[in-house]
Amino acid sequence: MKRLLLVAVILAAVAVVVIIAVRALHHDSGDLSVNQKAAAAIVIVDAAHGGSDAGSKGDSVLEKDVTLAIANKMIALASEYAGLRVVLARSSDTDVTASNRIGAAAREGATLYVSIHANAFDSPTAVGIETIVDAGHASGDSSWSLALAVEKATVKSTSAKERGVRAQGTAFTGLTVPAAAVYVGFITAPEERAKLVTSAYQELVARGILQGISDYLAAAGSPPGANVSP
Ligand SMILES: [Zn+2]
Image (tube, rainbow, N blue to C red; front, side, top):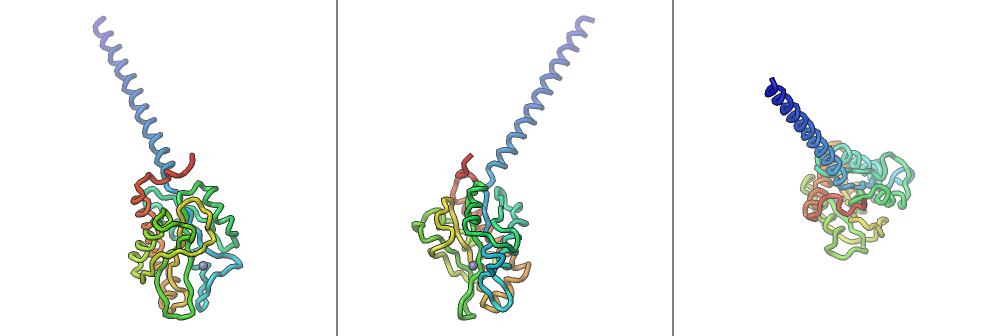
């Protein structure tokens, strides 16, 4: 009888240890998911122009509408790209000041900043995608790496002409996070304009930009969000 009691006590003790261990494991996995959230790279996507600023125009197509449509596709598709969290600097057809757009980077603790434009030119034969780095950046720095990755992946996704990466004065000069502006095609080229207004092509552009950002982060080697202050 005493021996039976001893066995019961031992079994009860084992059960308590198992319950504590299982709870500890659950607690660990809970912490892990918090870490993964904290490690997501925060990408500010700025759909250029908006509201009273239509940007460039081709036929009846306005740049501000094309850029917003692509930014909204990026939000919709972001969950398919591991470790990316997209935040829009403009989510509707409204006027947003340059300082407010850039301010989104600080407000959100951004990892990087990507602006979306459409291109325009006098000649309707100019086509293709180009990506701009602010002229203040030395060749080969992180903004250049981001721009090159975005240009390459967006051209690959859309099969558009590759115009390359170049430096130019931008509205986001002074940003401390890597930044680039991708000009997703010429609104003044009838064939490219016809593509830019379709949902299917906008998705290809959005996927290209997201892939480029992913490629940049992977090549940078640091965990996404490593340069986000706590
Ligand atoms: Zn523009």
